[in-house]
Image 1 (cartoon, rainbow, N blue to C red):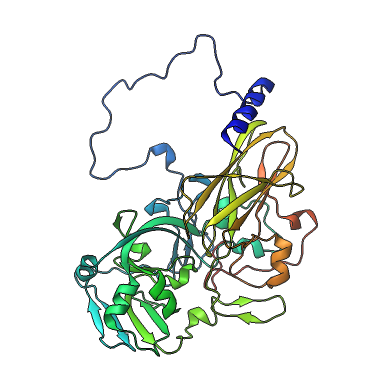
Image 2: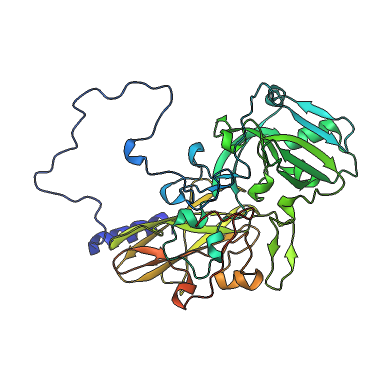
Length: 427
């Protein structure tokens, strides 16, 4: 929609009385100023007390909070940058405490010159600032549930994704300095957590765009995000973006670790298993209105997020009639490769029951699938890479619930959805 058509639609809505920007009231008074001095200067900013409810979601059924995930509250946020304290978190063995003075990163194996870097060494090297999303491979895991859950929210549907500006050294610089031997086709990255988490990355990817990051949104990494150093691997699943990075071993073969054999592999509908399915496929979700919210008849701006591990968002389409028709939404703010992208769509709701949906197409032509299309490819007992269209059902009373088509056709036998790494994140 261009500016002219938007203004025409706005004028029509005003004429119909469906959009009231200002309600004139007899005897209204301006909002009063504060009667006394406010709070003094503080060394670190804090949120307003009335916003204290905007926190990450952690399932109360986790057997231990040392392994599991905390979901970013995407239904309450806006923009493409997630505040550091609300960025989703995924841990396999809790968050280690690392003194930056003692930190060392070792690069060894099939290289001409094994190297070791302190944090100061890394910060002296040429750095880059890049805006990238990180998404857990288990994001969307609730989509596998049978029967689907009516009370699903946007946060619990797709909250294992976040966007940030990352600062760090291109891994390419470290590899070139070490001199990777021709047979060194794989990089085995290991973390310093108690799980000694290991993932394998093709050297080709490491030479292309991987960051050895030490800052997030301008400040040092938070401990749960890998302080003092982590990998950021654009477009690929979160488990490969090793936190608390302690070493990179250049090898001729992948590690075939637990995190890339028994976990983080995908089960196809025909029973075959796909390993090394790194790329996060096209996703979009309407975050407002979405599950758990309530709306009134009249004008609404439908808002949401889209992203793709293949590159950039090309377009997002929105349906306000359960998929019977689709119209293109507006992309707002910067549209960057491997980054979250915001979309909006102007909608006048007449109070009838309906279903809202969004689907995205990336710049490589990949299209977000329907749930039926997704399950033609992947087994129902899969755990990862769920990217089917999320539908929201708006009731005549304005209440918004999960609008998964399976909710309208009866319940299948229950299947417990696995989490990112085998755990059930969300009870």
